[in-house]
Length: 185
Image (cartoon, rainbow, N blue to C red; front, side, top):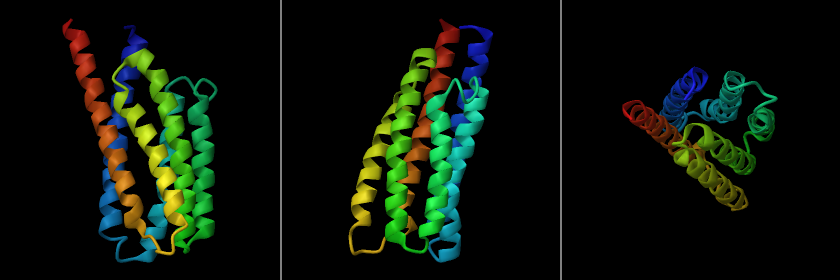
């Protein structure tokens, strides 16, 4: 492995750990404060895809730029558009869940693609690929649930964020273990 690859792998571990921490923090806020305040819930629902856009933008720039990481570039645009879409359809939570579900499908497919690409370079991407697939499936469920007469809450999305946080944490740990094994070999 070259110095550039080692530096990139180190960045990727930090990136995954950061994504896990932010997602866990979002989850805690969603289940505590936002459960009692529709205003805070609205802010968190808009901020979730904005955070994803920012994270993908930073990661793409650290990994060769947006031109070299087209799935992430597309994910940035989609995530910003979804945040705007959520803002527009608030306070109708059925519509919010539908928009969020559409985003989960797209971002899941894009994350799966990024995981497949990075697997060749760094290995240890199985959790990211699984997370992408599960995100797309969860998104389809959200789109279906959005059609129901029951009004969802931010708690409906909280599980999605929790699984995302878990997968980012597992990915960071998995990359760390792979790197350590490589050094010992």
